[in-house]
Length: 459
Image (cartoon, rainbow, N blue to C red; front, side, top):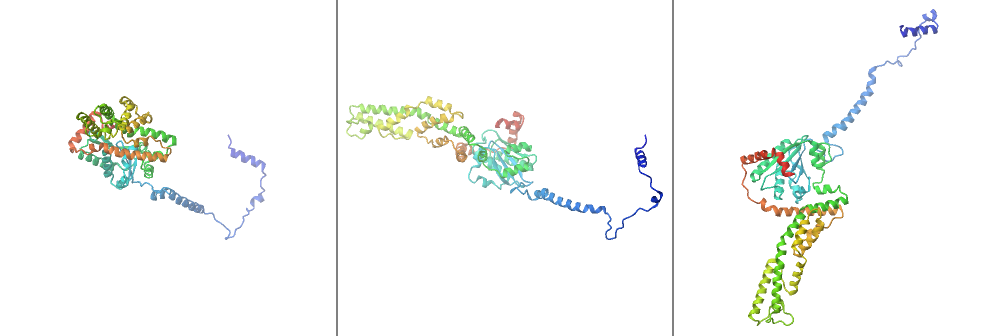
């Protein structure tokens, strides 16, 4: 096949006439330029504006990416330092703790409402900010023990974790040693588990919206310490009402009401019998032929009579003894026949069988219905029921909800303090290193691992 270039040249030659020899010999004309207008092309000149443009871009990139790393983001007032650390402590009351590079506490955040009970003490947060992590964890666990969140009479466990993407492993391990020493010195058989947790799992436990550890630290540093306050901001009013009913019925309010009613069961069984004895004796006094009264013949109308028979005087002495005994047992002075009838009327509508049925029905499903009847009974027996009546008043706004929940948290603190103080204050012998190690070994043998023991006692 012929070359297409040769074929094309042949076709052009056949179309365009050949140049005359004279024309071929003539020189090709050139345009002359003066030295001042003559320009030579330098390929390097094209890079000058491009170099300026590149330098400008480089400066912009430095401002965007480098400066925030050095001095913090432009939008964050309290950015996390790359050396700040974060830890989660779980007992039942769970918390997140943010520390600086030296392990000093910067922020404490409650992860559930039980932690709010501990952190609600006036001045507690301020007193613990700035402490070494180890010292703070000891004060927190000591308070949890005082409020009955840690089993001081049997085995228990706490877990301290830090994310794998963080810098807190050495502080976590040193804290473990300090907590083990604390337990041994106070005679408490409790183990300390530590875990370097996957960052995603760890952040989920913290309950913050974050993609990495640094953003989780930033979120926690700006978060409300109180779990109840933080969580309530996400509720609608309908959700708030439902949650309030659930929490009040599930919290210790239910148990406290049961305890108060149970404390009067024996009284409800015995007091009517004592009143009946007084009533019957008063009837004998009224019917006595030796009664000096004319229209009013009851004990209280004739008790100060003089010159009565020995038999009638003995009836008066017997009644005085019954009334004194009644006052000693129940704290109530019966000063007239009207008082006696009123006291007896109080028990006419009270049945122990009915009370026991109400107590059986008093659970989280129908707390508000059963509680009202029990509150009326308790009130009639002289028990202060104001806190129960207040608890049954459902809040109508988030603000009112927070007020009631904070009051409930404070009440729980005092109630738990009273309930567990005797156990907390018991003297316990220190645990030797050998006995503590044997305790851990026995748990591993029984449960397969300490992690399985943790799952057993906490789930």
